[in-house]
Length: 273
Image 1 (cartoon, one colour):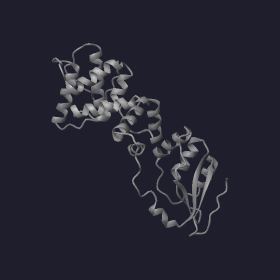
Image 2 (cartoon, rainbow, N blue to C red):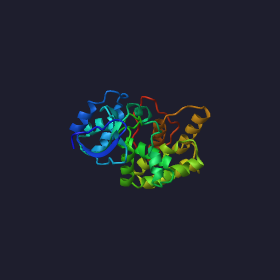
Image 3 (cartoon, one colour):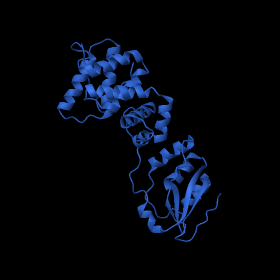
Image 4 (tube, rainbow, N blue to C red):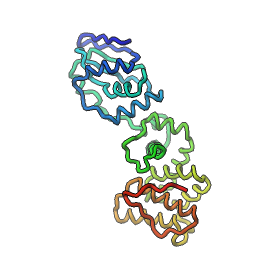
């Protein structure tokens, strides 16, 4: 369907329409009264659409009785960017002032979606999935300029169910040693396990308990560093914690002592060996 019939005000109608990029472009010409477009949201939606992960979920493209687009500009821009045609629910005939009440609720997070699926430790799972996804995209500093959508996180979890084990390790380690963020521990566990699973088991067990580590041992140096940071109330970004973990890991793998761990803000992220 390419033509949109608009009823009189006070008599809204609902249709399911297969919206093409051409139709989306036409509708956006009626976008004369809306908030600024957020490019990041458009890009996120477009990736889901192009990957076939967009679902008809009851959220509608909304038009006023005079034809003004009230809600849905980001989805329409994303549809154009994706180059795909998808079915969308379309509501027409709304009063213009209803726009003030649209998108007023809190956006559902990836953690919310995972919790609704019955996942345990949903918040930790979501944070690890996001960081693993970003790491695999080459965003080693977790800059959050390009983050995964909920659908992309779900797809990653389906592709790599071993991330569940990383969540378990993160939660268990945090119970014993609370100086490292669970999201970073879980991400590091997944990344390092891909290098050497058996060594990762020992490495994260020793991070948690610090057992039988001689002076100068990389894991002991790591533990002392993060405890000192906490005692001094230093605000340490996640990527720096990730660098600490990898530097300690590499030293263990190379069987060499490590007197101190540092990571300058402008230094590249070390890669695990």
